[in-house]
Length: 493
Ligand code: DHB
Image (cartoon, rainbow, N blue to C red; front, top):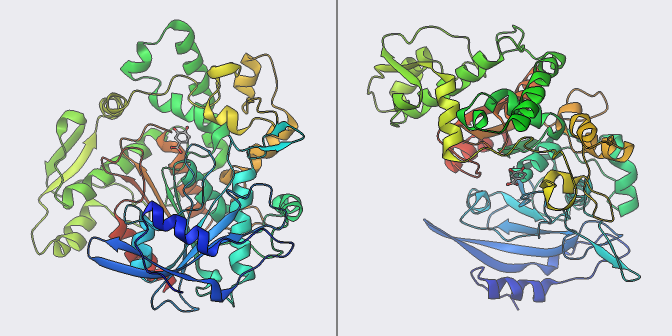
């Protein structure tokens, strides 16, 4: 019997009960097992057929997380793109979800995308063997599960509506990092032995596009970037001497890292430690100009300078979108003919960074790799790099040394498997051709360079990158969805 319902909790349980299957020796998909459901969007109901509890590995260790739910909207075909949303947050385990009007999945269905919402193990996951807890969700478990889900979708591509050659991944924060990884690590042989042991399908796992909101990524360089950017804020100046010393030591490591990346701006000139802060300023000015053009108020109290005139000249960023001159030509028409008469021309970056730090207090130094990892002094990231006995670990040589230890080979391997930066440009990796990367202009969960470096490295590698420090957005995701899906429709439909 087909049952129609809105996905209240009770209804979700009904779906689970109706469609639950057990892990099996072979991967399975039965197209006759779909269950009707719907999601209420602000402008109407979207009906779908749900396929739930699709285990994506044969050696299921954790039946709560290692499966994917797939939702096929009315009218979808074999050619429809697949929107794969990970709900990972905080590097924690993430249960396979249901579509929601509150995130991108509702609109994806409404626009005719097949939606896949895989679960994945996380840093607090464990199984119990002979009465002993074995933590099996530490890095790189989450990305392994997500890659297994992608392989599952490809394995049953012919049987299932939607085109597995048009998978678009989406996630926010640690989930943004996971989306970046799905985009940047396609078919990397380094994951193979793990995926094989899990019983993942023997398929490719590259994707078409990756949507990353505020990715908490490049963890081994996130501390230095954070102190380099925020180290001179009033907040840091109020720290005690020991913390200030650590902040300054970390900040001092950042220039060498930036220069080692060999990045180039869109105009082909080198992006180096010497011009990096200016580049961030340009990105923030561009963000403010786009917001201003859309009607936002840009207060000069937070550091921006506004002037009339031609807005001065500065180098194109990301294909030239968002230049003042472009604004006047291209976007004035889009606003119904109203002329853009005021340009954002300057930024007092110190003032702005203090403003950001006043919105949400900065993380204590070091922001990610704690100096001591015993007890509750460990960060979530230390926990993510912990071992199967749930002992957290340092993952940077700086913090490890302060903690009188060294980064182990196991942690180095896990850090590599969790870092998109080191894999972009690697010859045996298939990186997604299309990227949509957003980091809020008032987000301080990680520093701007983390997202900027990711976007720039991808762009330098020839990828199509739509990047923005999104105006006035804090640490958040799945926003400006009409804009996102207008962009996705063009490349995937
Ligand atoms: C998330 C936020 C953080 O600040 C962090 O360090 C890791 C993860 C999150 O929201 O997923």
